[in-house]
Figure 1 (cartoon, rainbow, N blue to C red):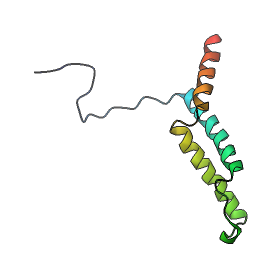
Figure 2 (tube, helix red, strand yellow; figure 1 turned 180 degrees about the horizontal axis):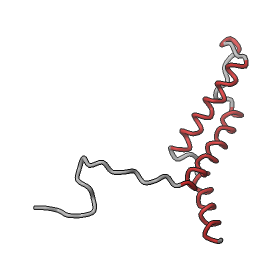
Figure 3 (tube, helix red, strand yellow; figure 1 turned 180 degrees about the vertical axis):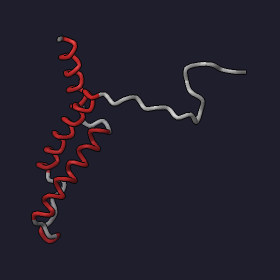
Figure 4 (cartoon, one colour; figure 1 turned 90 degrees about the horizontal axis):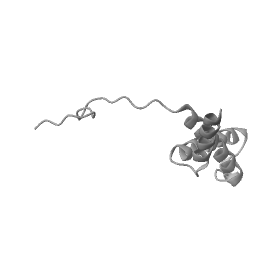
Amino acid sequence: MEISGKNPPLGAAVAPAPPDPQRKIAEEFEASFLSEMLKYSGVNKTSESFGGGPGEEAFSSMLNDAYAQALSRSGGIGIADLVYKSIIENQTKK
């Protein structure tokens, strides 16, 4: 029995859908917001006995950014969805 359809055979390479630029902008905005929230929450604060200094401060900022990007990509807190909807609505009004 042969089944025909639009789906490629199992194991065939399927090109991923091109990324939506508006969605990417919305996720970047949410990641920026989350990074600032993480910075002020004190998540990566270390005790003075660990060392501290300017190097730790710089790397802590990068770690916050990585956490924020990962949070945003995995669904975040809903800001990206709202921003994306707003972008789409504003584009359709023009």
